[in-house]
View (cartoon, rainbow, N blue to C red):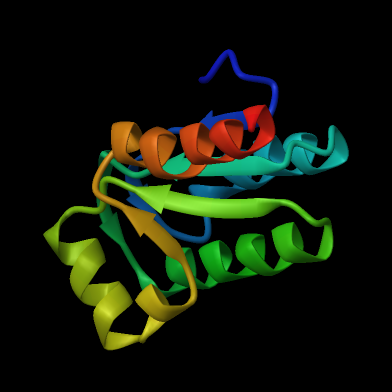
Length: 116
């Protein structure tokens, strides 16, 4: 998890299905209640995402937008990338190759704007 109070990182593992996203959703809700502006879900330890898991990610994305937070994804494996491409969800989510790219492109960019 990040030490930056503007960013929280969730790192689920294993198979992302309806049953396994309950803990992820609970932690996500805590971040929304705390008004965290940027939430990153790092999927590097996720082996498989089924349609229910994808649906939950879409739900989390919608809830983040309603709460004026932003949800990002990174480190998708081949199966997850294919799922997002087939369902056109790569058009909905901001997806990064890894956590370092997310911080470089989103957080550091936002900090540079604030400093100027």
